[in-house]
Image (cartoon, rainbow, N blue to C red; front, side, top):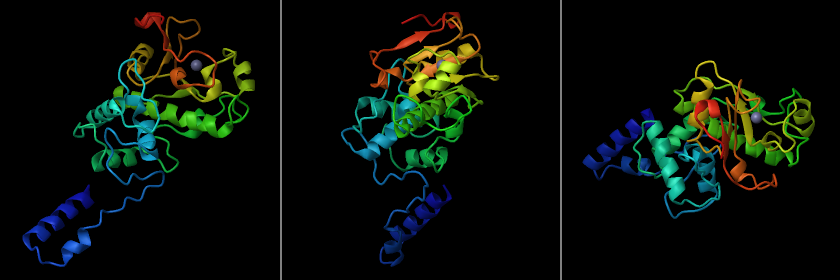
Amino acid sequence: MRAQIVKRAVVAFALAFPGAAIAVAVAAPAAHADGCYTWNRDLYRGLSGNDVRQLQIRVAGWAGRRDIVETDGRYGPKTAAAVKRFQSAYGLRADGIAGSQTYAKLYALQDDDCTPRHFSYPELDDGCGRGGWSGGPLPSATTKENALHTMWKLEALRRDLGDKPLPVTSGYRSTTCNRQVGGASNSQHRYGTAADLGSLESSLCDVARAARDHGFSGIYGPGYPDHDDHVHVDSRRENDDDGIPNTTSWSASDCGIGAG
Ligand SMILES: [Zn+2]
């Protein structure tokens, strides 16, 4: 923010004294040193590329009710709407265009390993204490990437719930771990696409209800068998590796969320 103000002041000076050589010095945009990923252009509808995909990963949690943002690298209407919701959630000008303001917020939110500020790989990795991303149906790198997508959705959910702590009690589970905890045989936890959430600060029903707005196509909570002490969220619609249809599946009858 300070750099922005200084830059503005220098630009004002340069405008007042058009002949001044200092104008040349401010012509180049200030490079942002970010340990994870740096965007080099504004992004908006119609553009495509890996930079769009990187943006989609980070705003997929702002998909809107019962919707998802595909991480396909194409900036379509759903990406624009998600960027708008992200901007609103953080008090930025909500124009659906990803530019310096949006990037500055994303840089502030992401750690050097690309995880969002309030979630980490160790919180999501093998839930039976073994750590790591191996032993599941997918290559470790793919599982870990899925977990990263999950975390960005969780960051959005956490923001929506007032930025209160949202502990993950179980994330990725290797096949062995999943069996050990009695998980469903084809559980989303085995792909890195799921998280079980506890919360001391929000009610579980608040968590389950809010999750509907943040890109989670699988939600199970209070009222669903064995889910009275946590809320399960997952991204089954984006999971093309699990052999089940890419549809929404929600159930938390005690929270007014019907099956379907
Ligand atoms: Zn679960």
